Image (cartoon, rainbow, N blue to C red; front, side, top):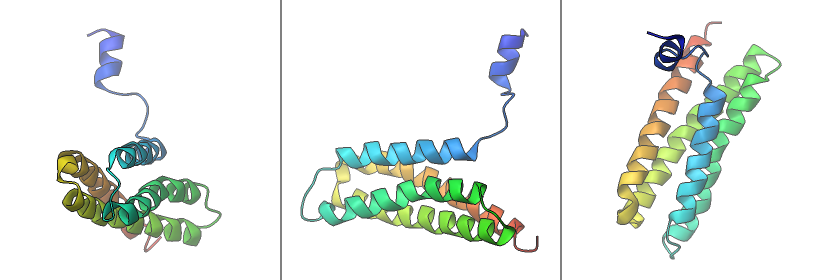
Length: 127
């Protein structure tokens, strides 16, 4: 196996949660632009965008926290915002059934992020 093949199979860079939450926020914005605006979806869209993009913003804040207490607090916000995003995705899927599959993919990513932040939060509980 060549070095190129080896590097593609096994990334040399450690996993970047800041990048992942940023890509999630970008996906949220892109998806929100495709949601048809109606009386039902109009109030859902801004809530969804706020919670979905807040995950990454709060992770950046956590990453630059000045204390363990502040870090844990910011991670708890990430956890709450990812969970709230799942709720809005569920409501959007109900309001715009044509977008259900894409909403489901984003919901799964929000769920994974929620599980990651929950694990980080628990691991910092006794630290």
